[in-house]
Length: 393
Image (tube, rainbow, N blue to C red):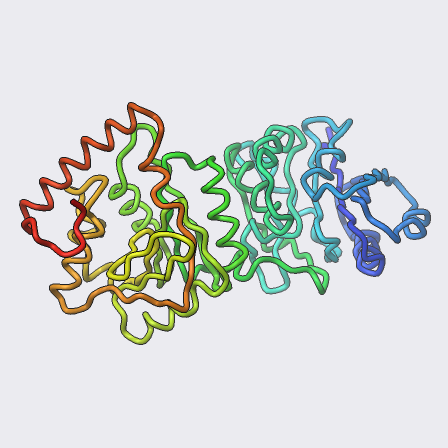
């Protein structure tokens, strides 16, 4: 039995771009049998073009733009769960033989989705313009992908993340599409990361985490990855998730950031320049809130050389003996003893919610944190004494 294939192209205006994309679909060669759904997502200026469309095509008109995920949800209406759905966003131009290689990985039940490559080879799934998945898998993943609002440029990333819970995501270099000129993704999306940003949290689904990640996406020009380490069950403090995130990091530069930090435009480049000039650790200026000028460790940056040199043990940057508190002062003291204290980079700015997690209203968690802080204080003072500048009292 032949498994049906449906191509879903989301059109959001730009008639010339839509025309080129549809013309490329009409030029498919040796392609598996398929039908097409065109979703006019609040688009204007497409009536004449859509009126000329012929063949096995279904047109879905959305009066108001809802984004690619909302358009996909509408397009799935009436499709059998086994149907292979090929989502095309931003009206890309496809090459004549793109379809067969793209849907081939879906014969393996362990594959949740496959993504097309570009003219230069493989493309990271979060940056792909074309994705194939089973209709049933998409229906299962879409509620998670749409649970929280995301910028349209990050919609494919949200969908890929949700699909990954259902199986592997396979980039297919043999399936080639050509993103239409004028489409834009956040800087660096899909590239090998230059910068790794580690965010420990007790609640990865919280509003503050989403706000932190969205600010990073909008205001970080360098290719980067964000590593969110959720340690809420059971809580492990601050040191363990930071060390775990740093072990997973791939970038040459690394940032450790609290989940209640909002980076502001231009936050990264001045810090990179300072690190390249020889700084061991840098930290930005916190505006509209409390600020420490010796070391504001709620957001700090370093190179991989610093990670290797100042870690207390292989794979352990912060001292595991300090669970919740004092690990920043421990690092600060070790840097001072080495004659290389952290450097404030005032040209880089952030906002900080000032320890929203530690100030939790949960009485059980609050009691656990308080007990760990007392233990950390005792461990710190047994090593360094009671007169270390900047230590909490």
